[in-house]
Length: 165
Ligand code: FES
Image (cartoon, rainbow, N blue to C red; front, top):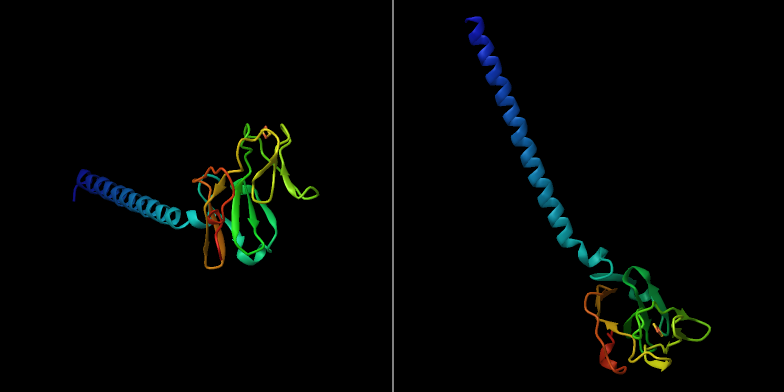
């Protein structure tokens, strides 16, 4: 075999190796992308933040009568005495300030202009024009999920705004 023929075959071999490596890398990238998409598809129910479905916790973590601030979802989860759940958006219905729950007052007290809301989010005083907005709650396998992408305005509290266990 001539020296130039051997050199040519060596170059062809290198080209084939390069193509094989490039092909393998493309497949690995495609597989990784598919796995990432699948992971994203199965994750939103368990790891969402505000604007999506937020896992608040296990049902038994919320005793009847309690108010829990779920910071990641920007809402308060109130478990009523009858065991049902109500998710209240922390945003004041006056001008949008974040409204803290004040344990000592047993109410939500907006620091901006003094609006007051009771445990069910109904206005007790101040300039707020309507109760705190609510988010839909679902219970799945003993876990509480809140859809923070679907806020609902209301003029007063109604029992059908709550979710039974
Ligand atoms: S923003 Fe809450 S009372 Fe004005």
